[in-house]
Length: 131
Length: 63
Image (cartoon, rainbow over all chains, first blue to last red; front, side, top):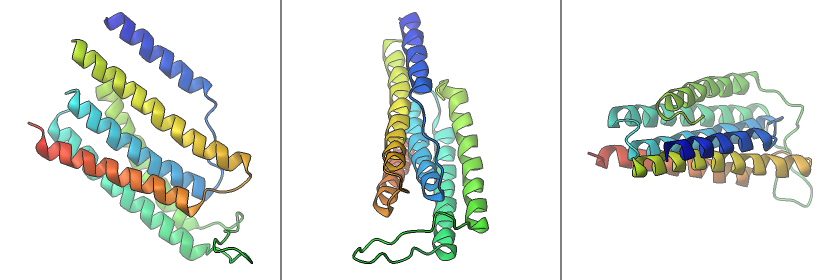
């Protein structure tokens, strides 16, 4: 049973590597990736708690740090909107952001959140073995 | 052992599902030559908040 499980996990990790992960090449895509990582970490921690791979204290710490990461990502988003406001598009209610616009402050905040999230993923992986 | 193994497997499957969903969103935007939309960002943020809420609830109710 244990051998089958290891084979299944190895198969999935190989499949992940072969999926051809897309690179987030804009600030918006990096923002989306950061939010998705908070989701993945929180979901993974909930399941790890159910599987008794982590205890309540670790789960609570992951939740608290995840909430902090979310706040930092929100701050990055707000800074970006301030520095790079979307321009109105004729005939559309949606605006468009100049892809060449750079917000140093927003990039710094997002980098800060990314560092926190990488730490959380590493912590979770030490308990679960799932990266 | 069986239950734990199943839960660990479920954990690996969930991690892969999250990666696939994110990749799909980025691939769609890249294929259409655009950035992600505010609606896509809002949807993913909502999922993150819901997952954090769920984790906090599980933490306070387990044991």
